[in-house]
Image 1 (cartoon, rainbow, N blue to C red):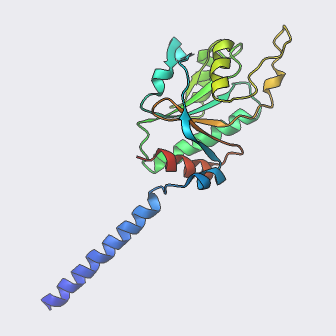
Image 2 (cartoon, rainbow, N blue to C red):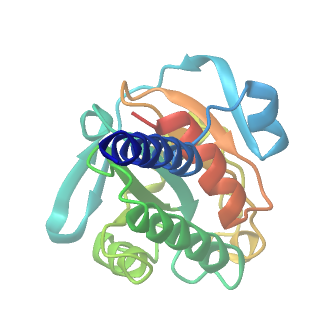
Image 3 (tube, helix red, strand yellow):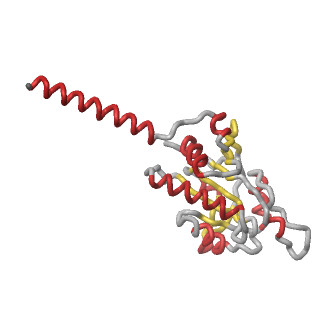
Length: 213
């Protein structure tokens, strides 16, 4: 009888172990190859690109510089608060991504999410930060004058930030902008970009593959 109980106990331990390994496999993000990442919308540079220092501002006139990128994976998106379609759609997808990561207890201590306004003439630091936090309280919105914006946007290959030559600053060029989502690594380097169209499932799959501990 004791022998039977011992065998049943060992079988139970075996089943629990197998189930634990199976569940762990399901919940642990898989590391994708570069080709798999590309198919799912994330293009990684073979060698991350260095970027020069910059300075933007968020609420309460707090400075945001390249130093704030160090030690963190940074998602950076270029948009503006008056954007009719593209920005709110993309920001909503990013907010859903963050929600999914929180539900999985994914480590977000070394992750951050930054919205850079491409309309600094109308988006103050307070305006763009409030807009960003409307999608998620951890999002950061930043702004600075156009020369600084153009400097960073050029380094990150972001289009649709040039103003019209019209002296009255016609902003119609911004309305239909389509930008990639920028990925910066913990060394403050331009690591890659998520290409549109964006979906939560693809963003979640590729983001976790690259940034998992």
